[in-house]
Image (cartoon, rainbow, N blue to C red; front, side, top):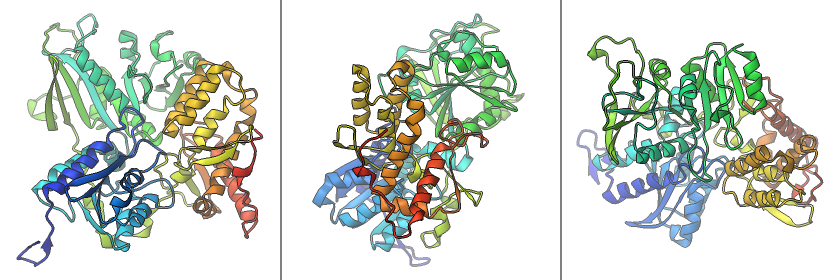
Amino acid sequence: MAFCIKNMMPIVTCSSVDSGHMLRAAEIADKSAGYTAPHPNAGCVIARGSKIVAEGFLYGQGTRAAEIKALEQARELAKGSTAYVNLEPGDCHGDDTSVNALIQAGVSKVVVGLRHPLKHFRGKAIKALRDARIEVDVLGEDLQNKNIQEALRACQLVNAPLLYREACRMPFSVLKYAMTLDGKIAASTGHAAWVSSKMSRKRVFEARSRSDAVIVGGNTVRRDNPRLTTRQEGGHLPARIVMSRSLKLPEEANLWDVSANHTIVATQHGANRSFQQRLARKGVEVVEFDMLTPKAVMEYCYDRGFLCVLWECGGALSAPAIESAVIHKVIAFVAPKIIGGVTAPGPVGDLGMVEMSQALNLSDVSFEQIGPDMLISGYLHPIPDLLPIIPAKEATTPEMMLSASDEPNIISFYKAWDAYGAFSNFSAHPIRIIGKSGDYFTWKSVEHYYQAQKFEGVQDFMAQECIERIKSAESPEEAARIGRILERQRPELVRDKWESVKIDVMYRALKCKFSMYPHLSSLLVSTAGSILVEASPHDLFWGGGQEGEGLNHLGRLLMRIRAELLEDDSGSSRINLSTWSSTV
């Protein structure tokens, strides 16, 4: 070990082996991209010296942690090994499952790529591991040299959406466009099919599948009538958002077909009420804003829990989006074509700049040839470096480990990675319930059970097949997607009186969850005196809505279960619902 002459402090160096293992952890952390919605990307590599003995990654929200998967694969080889994690462990189990697994497996050292960007996780796992006398090194803090920079950068890139969301309080936003060599996105007539090659368009489909939402303006809907799909069977489908102040949009459009994918229309308050009603009847969600701006829409997307948004709009919308600083990255496909035309549109409208010295420069620019096209990408705003606001390991405080809400009497939860994410129906807590047949079955999550119950007892092949697909779905998100799509496409297959029993179905599943996991019931009881609100801004049945207009049935059920748990201090009222037979 080398020493610094000035202060005689040891300088820890990182070998190429350590760097290589961390690069691998960052690589596998991205393996579920396109299959599930964007989420904190976590990968874990278990190694003994230069040899990797096991690895695992977080598949999606509410799925088993990367560390758990890797340790199960490693088995006895985990004892005395080194675990490399690109992201500090932080899960929604409510019981530090990942950290405890690392401790119990007997790993001798953990190398962490990034401290967790979310405040309620940041530093918690590192402190717990060190308290257990496990050596922990953090890139950029305990490990600093040339070898580590590439690995650190890889860890930042794979979780760039999470870093931007936490630092900027808005989703990571990417502006994508394709243009000719002379800077046109369409001909003077508006015709634009196709500017780029088929290979470039395939990359666009991939970019969509990595996003929570794809945004276009009214001009794009009128001119191109896009579908904004990912062109893949299964996998994640981003929400489609149309921004239009006037709502002067076509009566018929591909985006109004919501049988397989969700569409949101963002508009000015009071605009074209009759058209709003017609869209609502088609299943399109309409969200009104007092002032429709790119920043207002991004704030809404932040409240909705989105991590990454792809902008595929024209110049009239991309310019104000850039001006309002909501665009963080640009990806441009440049085709070797010249179309000309004085009135042919370009990718970015007027930014009010009159001198070249005012031009916005991109950082971390990369170039890649995609067939005949050139893909140029770069950042308008560099990836946030959260290190300056992360305390030293000795300064980690309890209040940083758990954050509930700015309002003392209200506890909000939504995504499974939130501070109270264990309350979510998407959390990674399997439940074991007896069905109507009298057989036990373990559902991977509350959401798996809930979605399957929509079709329970329906004597139809498609309904029964759907239940089996929900059972095998790897993530709660996939289970929800399978159930919701069939419900929209074949509403007649939903069981009779579903609307009148679905609250009871959710109650039964939640009660089972909190009965099976004592640490969850303790966490729920600890919120006594607080109002629990499911913070979804769009689900006005289960959630609280954007401005408290929602019915908040999920929060109400949790408070009901909490009251039942508090009724008997001895705990005798805690009925194990896994022994109940299905009655709803």
